[in-house]
Length: 412
Image (cartoon, rainbow, N blue to C red; front, top):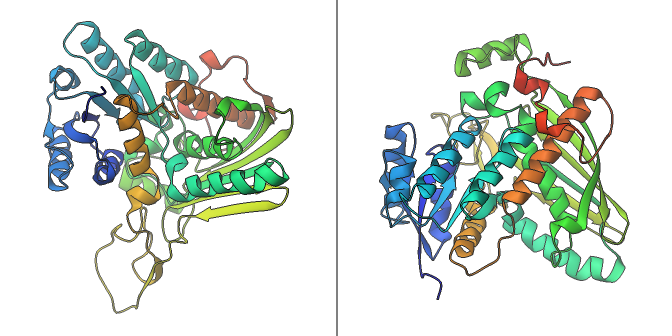
């Protein structure tokens, strides 16, 4: 009999970890019991958040190894910054190999790593200790995406033929923490940060829900990157003041577009169009997707939430994000996204991977999928740098690091 409950520990205590902790209110058979972060204060606050939400009697640990050694911890959710990924995974594997503790599984946030070589190393390390893995891609689990995807395939594709074009975008005004803006730390700019969502989402939409992602294979990638906003003098000065990053000297891209040509299992061609942006100014974070076929279509926009508030000029207060993530205004007509962890898919993915590690479900996404996503991202960077369409998989990715990540991209 599979264990009735799963004890989960978080590696990382930042913005993303807190989204997951809030989502845990919809997870019935797992508890948040631990948090580790290099920032002990943040770890304590994240653990306190879990306790206040009654999603687990979480405590802060002094190290990842100490957390693994606690028999109450059965699985880890790795949500720390990209530049710490290899170090964190190496400590996890070392703790298990040295007999300090055991785990049932490990789930890791997107992207799996900063480049293809690091992504393969992450998978190889975890494979060495035989852990179940889960690649955390929340947008595939967003309720609107999941419901629309299943319905369109069950009704439209079943009667008139498979879809042939998918579009996806993630757009907001810029990341919360300085490391995201630094190409050498994060691994790139917005393409590495957010195209991991959109590139996988278009492939997912084009795939029959009853079949594996591998039945829709990427064949050719065409990409473009640009620094549209944050290299402009006035915004570069603002970024330097708030984040300590100088985009006049060392920019990262704040806009990226990718066209992926897929080949389906029946030999037809399908296209995926994806765009991501840190230079979008609107109400806040906007996620969107479309799927088109011979006699049908679907569309999703997270800001079409069904709830709007209006504040006149007389309503004054501090800036915040209580209406929508990455909120850009405090007055006028404002869309509100209630229960963002549910709307963006965090709740459903956390519930799914908890059940995977309990032996109740088969994983929808594993570290192998995360490696392939990074492979697509690096192919996109090569395409953007060389100004041409690149066949997938591109040669030379084992040693490839984008110019943005090397600090050598000038924005042109």
